Image (cartoon, rainbow, N blue to C red; front, side, top):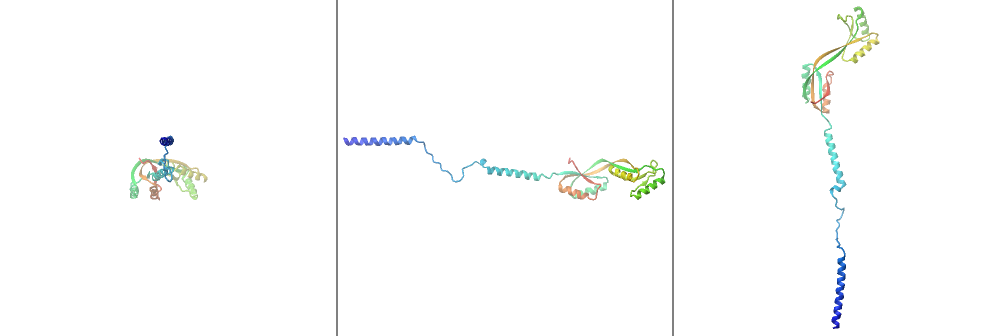
Amino acid sequence: MPLVFGLLVVFNAVFLAWQFFEQQNHGQGTIVIVEEQEGKSLQLLAERADLVRVENTMTSESSNTTHTKTQEDLVCYRVGPILDNDMLKQVRAIFEKSGFDIKVTTTNGSNDKYWVYIPPLATSEKAQAVLAELQKNDVDGAVVTDAQLANAISLGTVNSSDKAEVLKSKLMALGYRAESKTTTTSRDEQWLLLKNVGTVGTAQIDRILVGSPQIRREKTSCR
């Protein structure tokens, strides 16, 4: 009987000890073990500054490339004035052979001329004497025989008012008073319209027009 009682006491003590440790284990939180990967932590693509910089660089380069391709703007020129039909055919053939896209246009233009002269002198002998003096100073002219301006001395015709003023000043320095008259004539002008011309084409136009000062190129609308 004492033996049985002793075994019960031992079993009871073991049970109480087991129950005590079991309650201690349930009272603690669950431990989660996270295995870290070697190297850097995971990042979203949008969070990576290096990728964002690459994207911006590509956009900038693409924009620069587009600008370079469209930097040379094509323009249109008109070449003229051409007053003679034979000259028109010749000039047109040269530009067409050079590969230009050409259209012929006709405009009504005006041409101003400035006649410089010394007013009529008293006699033809006086006029001839004055003319001889002028020729000694490298000024050419002719005595006018027309009834309205008889015995005047014609000093020639120039195509601008500035040139007329220069000639008049030269005569004044020699002691003679000169005057000028303006005459305006209407004329039909032929022009060649050259479309879609770039830098190389512009230089080619200038080479073709060398030696033809009466013909010029002007930038114009492409419409």
